Image (cartoon, rainbow, N blue to C red; front, top):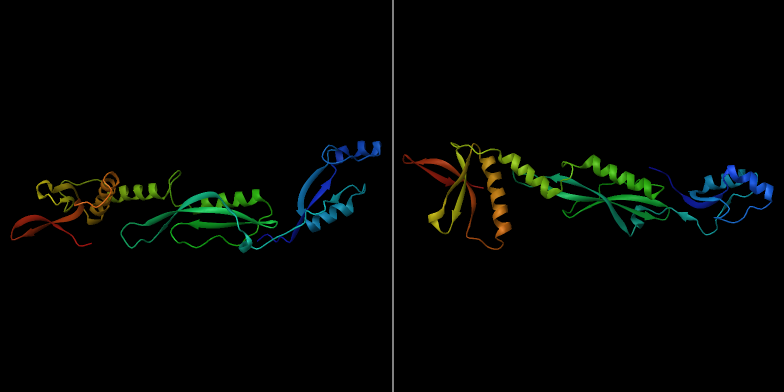
Length: 241
């Protein structure tokens, strides 16, 4: 963790223009005189002022900032996002989009993670001296923890994962995605698969598409069935969830 106590803005004169000011006997005023200002740790700023033989370097009054704690940050800005997966209680993983945010408390900058899935802040309490350093750290954190492919959000990640889990249909598969409807006449097999896991993933894909285009309560849908023998007759029977 970067230790930050108090910072101030210190004004100094670049060495390459000091000679002209010495010759003129006038140091002028900032910023037209070429001086520069930067925020530094108080101890470092005081050392610069004390070591300036010309006596020009000085700390700007009223610029003192003391580092606050992470809990003191009230305004957070999202800098980067990544996809995080979790156990969903089904054969397929759950996924959510996680925001990596930065916020300032006094002279210190902090990171936090934030998501809509109820996850806790997983960023530590490291304090950064500048906003730029915090932004770089946020982007690096997102890159290191991203479980998706480039350009994917959680929705696209889950869609790809389902497609991979479903794989290719099999003409003589033991399991199928079955179109079930209140109108029995149009029921039937949509596609067959070798395993129940494949059929389950394929059925979820089809049901997502169905509900996307037909919102509301439906009396039809895709379900997983298994080909079984009943007194010598083969039929498709819904498997238990």
